[in-house]
Length: 86
Ligand code: SF4
Image 1 (cartoon, rainbow, N blue to C red):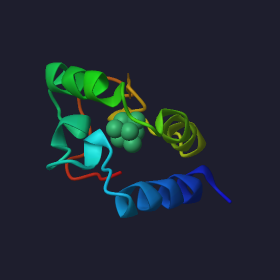
Image 2 (cartoon, rainbow, N blue to C red):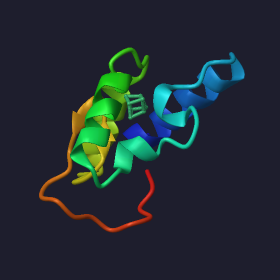
Image 3 (cartoon, rainbow, N blue to C red):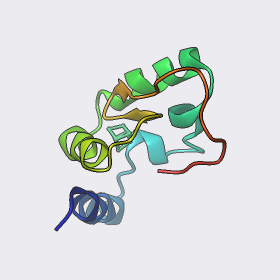
């Protein structure tokens, strides 16, 4: 099972129990915003997330190079493709 599959299972279980992780509340746009200051807010918002370790495992496994994952801004440089989703 991949980290992505494990994360999906845990997120579904949390959702069934009435819990949404911070990036799934509202639009979640801050996690992939072009503005580093906005992404910094997402970094802070991740801190209490119950799936930090799994989220980090997905980012590493899938080698994500932009956006905030597990409280880490993985964006390199200043541009990224618009519309990319987690
Ligand atoms: S740790 Fe991952 S799943 Fe949790 S809020 Fe941050 S980006 Fe979302």
